[in-house]
Length: 200
Image (tube, rainbow, N blue to C red; front, side, top):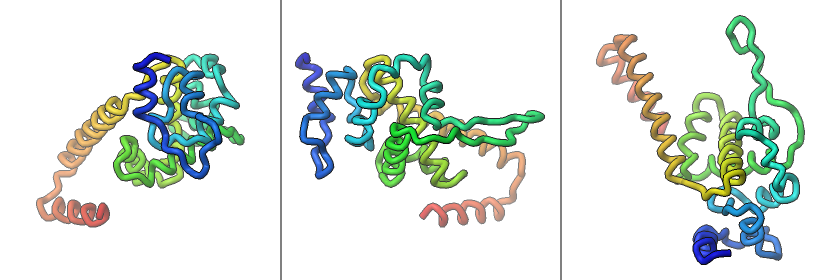
């Protein structure tokens, strides 16, 4: 391990807790995967152990992040008829990696300053917490696939930038909808007041 690698691993080393294994999992996982999965806040010892024991280098068999997420059962199996989605059930199964990622996603949903928290809250507001957990777990699967297949470090700032871009697009669409509705000032004030109260 080079000096730069040791510095990077030390920067993101996971603080040992009561559930920590009796060996240096951070170092072992870094040597095996050539990237520090613990740099992603919310990734637990259990998640990394699942990846080591249940997947390993087999992740390279998946040609892209979506195929990996599909294998985990985190992508809805949409059935379309007449241009409309009539069913979006996810494949059933007890994939231990998917379960670990759902636990990580649920933990992220309880954090205030995680870079994926805004994404979690947007989905939770529209579709409920369970949908937000699945969607965030899918995001984590995509991040992990890119980290492991490309042996690249976690880029927190990329996640934050992508989140801001998505928010900007949504605000643009909202602006168009509000303009089309031609709300009066009183109606707009009531709408803003209602949602301001719901946020607090």
